Amino acid sequence: MTDAPLRGADATTVRDAVERGDPLPGTSGFAGEIDGRLVRDVLGRVPLFVDGGAESDRTAPTWAFEPTALEDPVLFPAGAVAPPDGPVPEPESHWPLPDPEPDPREAALETLERAIRTAAGRVRRDDREIAVAFSGGVDSALVAELLDAPLYVVGFPDSHDVAAARSAADAMDRELTIVELEPADLERAVPEVARATGRTNAMDVQIALPLYLVGERVAADGFDALAVGQGADELFGGYEKVVRLDHRVDAETVRGAVREQVRSLPDQLPRDVLTIEATGLEPVAPFLHDDVVDAALRLPDDLLADADERKRGFRRVAARHLPDEVAGRDKKAVQYGSLVARELDRLARQAGYKRRIDDHVIKYVSSLLADANGRAD
Image (tube, rainbow, N blue to C red; front, side, top):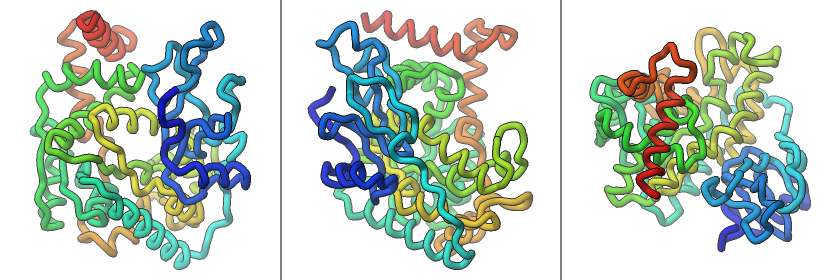
C-alpha cells in the first residue's frame, strides 16, 4: 500500500460514483482504496494491482499502484469495487461500460467537439509543463494543437514516424524535437520497461519502448508530463478489424466491434501509464476523459468506420483544428512506425535467439532483464 491511497480523482467524487453506480463521473480515471474498499474506474486508466500471494504474509502489502511493489501482482479489474483482502472480483462488476443509443449525426459531432475541447481545457488549466509524444498522425496532432505544447517524435532515423512527424509539424507550422534511436538505446531500455510494467511479452515491450525513450528525453528537457493520443483508435474506430468484422472480433456490427476495442483498454493502459511514469513524467491522455468516452460511445456507425475511412467522426472534428492533410492521415502502430519492433527482432537474432526458436524476442527480453537484475544484486 502507498501513502496516497487514492489516485486520479478526489475522494468525494469517487465516493459519489460508488454510491450512484456512475461509470463516467467526469474524471480521467481513478483507482485505490476508499472507505475500506479497492476501486478502479471502468476503463482502468489508473493501474491497480493486488497481491495474489498476500494471504501467506499479512505483514506485506496487499495492493499497490505498481507491480514491482508486490510479490505476485494481479491486475485489479476495471469497473470493480471490493475489499482489499477479498477475492478478486469480475471486471465491470460495479460499473459496467455504458451502452447508450447513438445520437443523430450532427448532434454526435457537436457533442464530441465539446467533449474534446473540455478535456483539453482541463489539461491546460493544470500547473504542469507538458510535451506531446508526436507521431504525425491525427491523434497526436490534435492533442498537440489543442494543448499548444512542444512536439517530440521518437524513432530510428529512417523510420516512418520521424518522416511523418516532420511533414505534419511543417504543415502545422510547429517546431519538432526528434529523438533518434540507436540499437544500444533499446538494449539499455528493455530491462527498465520490463521491470516497470511487469511485462516481458514482445508486443508489450515493443509498444512501451518508444514511449519510454521519448519520455526520457522529455523529462531530461525539464517537462513534468507527457501528453499522448492514447484511446483514439479504440474509441473512434481506428482498427481495420472493426470494419472487416473478421475472426478477431465477436461483434456483428461496427459499433459493437468498436465497443469491444474500448473494453480492451483496461489491459493495455497500465503498460503505457507505468512506462511513462517510469521516466518520472505524468501521463496525460485527453481523449480518455469521461466526457470524451461518453461522446464516443454515442457515435453512430457512419461516424465510426467503413471500408474507405476509419475514425470518421473523430477526423471531422480534427479537421476543424488541423490542416486537411494531417486530419486525414492514417498512421502505423508505434512499434512499427518507429522501427522499434524491427530493431528489437534484429538484436534478438544477433544475440542468438533465432526466429525458428519459439518466442525468440520474449526470450531475448527475459535475458536482458535477468542480466540487469543480476547486476543490481
